[in-house]
Length: 350
Image (tube, rainbow, N blue to C red):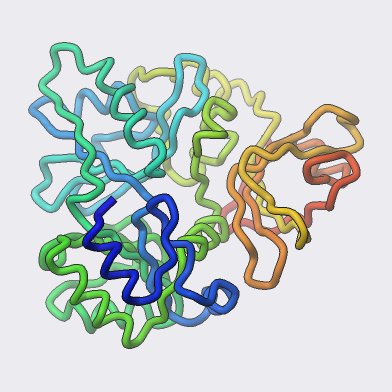
């Protein structure tokens, strides 16, 4: 938590709970415009771990599912961290700082300390240090129509990228392209207020739930505390979005992940869907049911966010056979039905 930054945001009518900006006074309106108008979103609900040291690349290469050798100060990558049984403890975005020395790992702030403690168990004699870097920078999301043009106007001497997961330096920070109309600014706290004031003249302020919805819309999963150890990486499509390397050496869970890939025995995949629920909140960890599994759950909600049109949009890991042959229901066998939506990438039929 950065109290000075939150005090600044409060002056813009930010409603803050548990290090998360819920909204800026008009949650329904903010969400309704997220797919079109440019939005400015505080990302303090995401933690940041700085991993550094002489042996940092080799250390991370032996711990993470992605190929760390392909990550630099100009390219980010999704990735996962697994138990020895191949179950995900975390998913994340990782890149190098502007100097190309340290690695920065972004994940839900609720998992930051446990991830640091877990990784430290395996440092042993390696020259590697891990620290919570969440408050040493301010991260701001900007998304929607004209987002790229607004950034070019704000950083005229920087080349604003259009390639997903491209990272470029900006004065006092870095800029990450998540997709064509969605970017993340990482900037020093000293410069953050002036930048927000400048951008807010042309973009409306929106709560963190809008960022959640954009991630769901693009099929980008996030492991939370409640879903730890529920999925192997391929179940949440990490292999499709570049978060798994099958050419690198060993890491925790690698044998299970590789066996699943090459034997083709993956029975569950992640799907995007809509749930028409107005009276109850859909949340990560909720079970899903279908007729072919009767009282046994056929899937689980990975991420959920209110939809601009009402109800909830979700990412859900579901038994593929249930999706193909049966209606999927939320929470109970007779609960609200899921409407399966397309993802922006192709999910293979394993």
